[in-house]
Image (cartoon, rainbow, N blue to C red; front, side):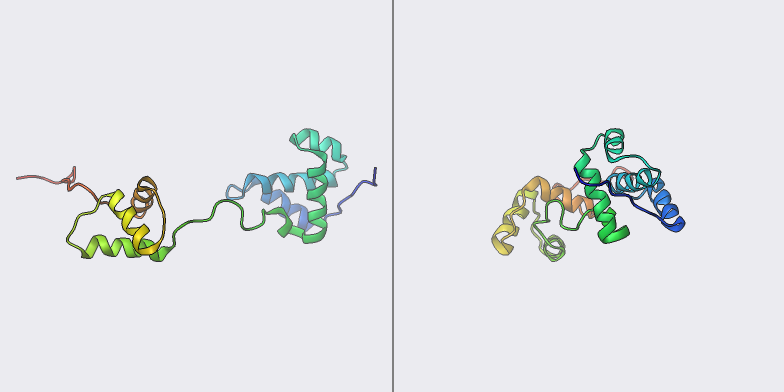
Length: 151
């Protein structure tokens, strides 16, 4: 077993890590990594830190090594995590233009087929409907708004 990695933090770094740990808009994994560093500087052993956070000891060591190599930037996850979008902003603008300019009324299945045939973008009708709804776009059956007064 190798020697224990001890991290030494300046007062400014300790303050930054404390604020990071309490911030609301920071991912939980980043907060946990900040906690690991703070516990290490207080003298806790890697095994104790791992047990307290329900982590593997190797994950604690990896966090400490990332801090040594990368500093504060090492606390965040690397970019590229998660699934990539299958469509771009220009594809959605194209569909919105089709809805606005063409006299034909489209449902989500028809729009999905149009996108697949003209842009080679394969999205399900449900996903397309959710994306357009999120952008504030409604399509399909013509309904009267609930708040409108019919005379």
